[in-house]
Image 1 (cartoon, helix red, strand yellow):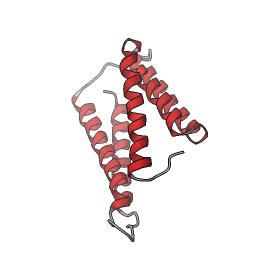
Image 2 (image 1 turned 45 degrees about the vertical axis):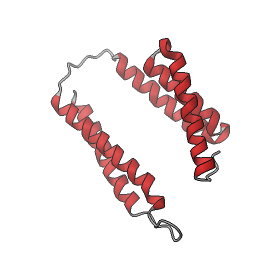
Image 3 (image 1 turned 30 degrees about the vertical axis):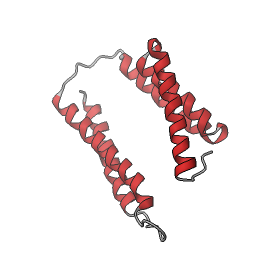
Length: 144
């Protein structure tokens, strides 16, 4: 991989480590399990750190020829970034259910192609309903 891939891997790894440290320093809950508010952010930080480490290992193990012409992968990457930005912009206006379903469906169609549209729709629908149920009914946290 190119040097910029290594730099990105290092940035992701450092971000994950800083996020993990910041998560560990979150205030503890005064009632119930004191680490309750820390589990999810801490897990997310560890996951991002592991992904950054895997990216770094992969970038050090493989070499790729560079080309001035953008590859299909880099075009998909920028489309995925646009999907994420769009999701963040419409989340509070449209609400969790619609924005998450549309985002996941679009993202999965981008990754899997239109040949697997039924699988992409099914996964997006089940994930959206599952997360909504988990937060609304189990954790008793209202989603937008």
